[in-house]
Image (cartoon, rainbow, N blue to C red; front, side, top):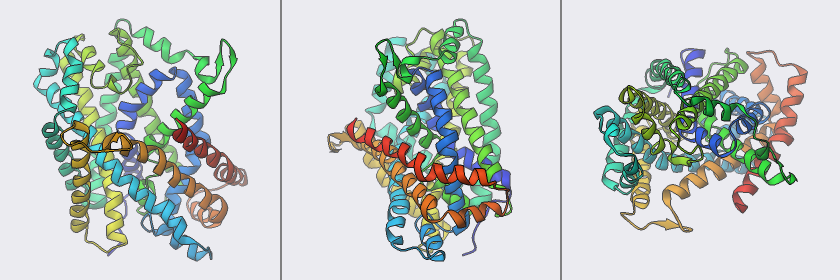
Length: 462
């Protein structure tokens, strides 16, 4: 089967950025900002992007572009060329762990997608504006307890995702991203401008622009490591989710990326769009929350409980609620199609499935996983593992353990074993200074492994 490729550098950039810009940016990033001190969290997050995530993104894409293979065999292809041993372990922890993580991720992601679609339809019909403030929590709870609504909405998302992926790299993924990404940012900018001009939004802006030192460890009792550690691990985990690191997605997209295009420029553009989306999400939600007098530390319920109350108080609230949930719907699609493609690529490249059969197989696998998660989370069937419903379990395992282990494997692989072929691949399209090579090496050998190990330790003992 002929290897598919993106038709242009911008096709790759927008598709990869679309993968990153999803629920992690719009749903998760704002409530973490609220919980970890606004600007304090943002600054730690930006430092992590610069010193840990940038080299890892370059590495993951370069592994894909160097090997031109799937997430499992990529390590074998590169390793065999440089005479490495024990390749099955690199493939297991770097490849198969990513596959396990993606299956779990899609299973719970479609459940959240079902909530997004439900609220979009409620905003479209105008019903969302009629729900009394005291009933908003009940509305969300009723939704999460209804298997039929969650299942039907999630299956619609699954079908739409499959139809996009079956179109292939150019006509499916790339074309969808080229249309949706400009629309996404128009809505982002319009909503953020409206939010910061609300009466009372200045309190939200003050919160976002004021450094809360206690979340950096500087408390009234002196310096304490624990608050800084919690902020760091929260920001690091968010960065991985936001940038789709450690799921094999960027590796697969790298295998479709032309060797002639500048990899550094592409990564910088992806990081720019992703960070811009995250910051715009914060400036949409936090000022609006303060303007409405809602607690900024509302947690995950911000998007589905607190924000509807905000829209009800706005002039033209129906339009703005529809715009926001449309934004969330489109961003969810650009993410699900990328995660879906990673599994489809594995079946096509490693097991020689046709694209149609690969997409159908992924639909069956993720459909089964999503059904189990929806049954467990809604309480329709009592399914718990380690005392957790499947939604909480899969989110916990995929977002914390598998993504971190895959990224740690990738950092050690490039930092200690495959630095020469990776740097050679990057140099085919971009100048690489000796200073960057040293920075790249130090980050992958020491900085990233230490940060990732801390994240694992925090997850185990939390």
